[in-house]
Image (cartoon, rainbow, N blue to C red; front, top):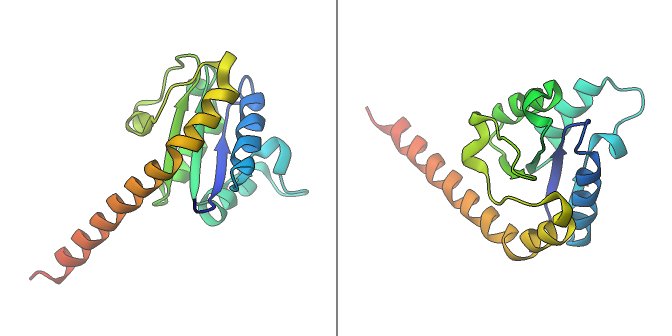
Length: 153
């Protein structure tokens, strides 16, 4: 399995514990994880720090969607930062949380909050590599199409 750098997006109100658990699980599988509460840069503005992590550091964005996510201004800004990149976003609704329409197509699994550690570990163990491979193949097809289109008169 290829090691990935994963930015974890979560709602401060109800998602920080899930972010910490997700980071531990990802790191246990050889990936690097970044979430604000643990990894923030000293002296840097929150918005700048998060923007830098999404645009320049991470390979993927893991969007943990909880009950508070739909009204979380911070997570909406993170969606905006992700949208300006070509990075994969993996959306994980927890406890049936509503997912913003703009990222709904990127839901890969739904997880119960009471069984989060076990279910997320199984997702990373059993599906992470295939989800990554499928995304990489899809982006390669898009790049080829764009290249061919650019050469046409």
